[in-house]
Image (cartoon, rainbow, N blue to C red):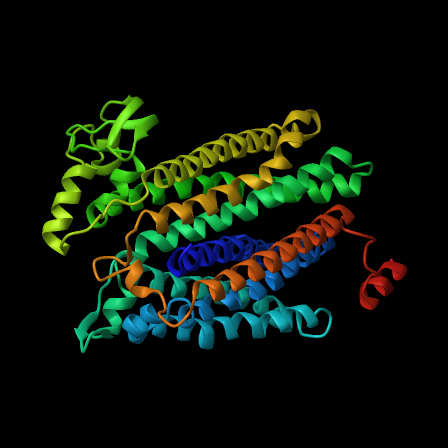
Length: 462
């Protein structure tokens, strides 16, 4: 394989590894903030123990996320040096702000939160975890501002063969950010919810004392609400994002549906086996008008097909193949949606069992929720792959193609070596992460902490 193909594989693999950790961090930190707030308001020690339990798992995941994320930015300057040279003036700004502002905010206050138990005033300690939650999600915002420029470049001017920033406000107010950011954040919250549901279900199925049942019952009920609300939110904002994508990147939508010809009304494919080389269906099962509804909120309306868009793009951008790998785009989109639908059903079931107080009599639900922890990870990974592969052949849509962005100074052998090294290293980190998460998740809450002196004295006097 050439350097371009290897560089694409390396960036894809390292990003999927990194994105294994990021959503859980973004979604679970809000749970810690809420649980600690409840403890601060009520004084109920169970909420403090739950905060520390989920906080331990959060910290393991956060550390792994930092370790895998550092490599990402190095690749821009090494494997993708031509890309960085072309858009660095624009793309580098949000990444620099993310590192210098948001990451320092979350890491500084995370340190205070970790070491501030029983040392900082309770109110200051509580404020620390809320600032970590805000900082981590602001960090995600700046990264998505950078990514949105790749999806829909705005606020730039071409000068001396480079894209230079013309309007910082246009960059941060890119309309693409306002459909992408909510989708990522709600997906992260759903990831945290299913992580909590699975671990809580495991403990509830094995609980032998009322204390464990009470504590993990609280976590389960919170996660059920959290999961149902955020899964529905993912679908709502995902629908908005699909509609926006239809207008901005119509080829991505056409590839996601293997829609070879423009149609009005446009059917949505349930299953298509296509001949990608000849751009035609071999076998297809479709729902009439449903794709038009997805794109226009009505069961009529034109959706452009691959053949027509290829002609349009050739007239607009010059000769070339502007069709992304259809099978990768099509199937990743379906795996993402399918995982989301299963999550919706399980979250609704968990919510129903919580409201009916039937957790103790729902062994099938508790059993299913443990492997269901994997569902949001599958949805997150396939969703990211769909988003990026669906933009091929562009690295920056309409401005720069992938083969123009790869470094001319790095050889295929050098990329292959780093690809193998980082793939193996990250695989080891994933194994370590899963081992540690499993170990401390199974350990449970542990023994109660000693009562505070003032509380102990009051109890003796009573």
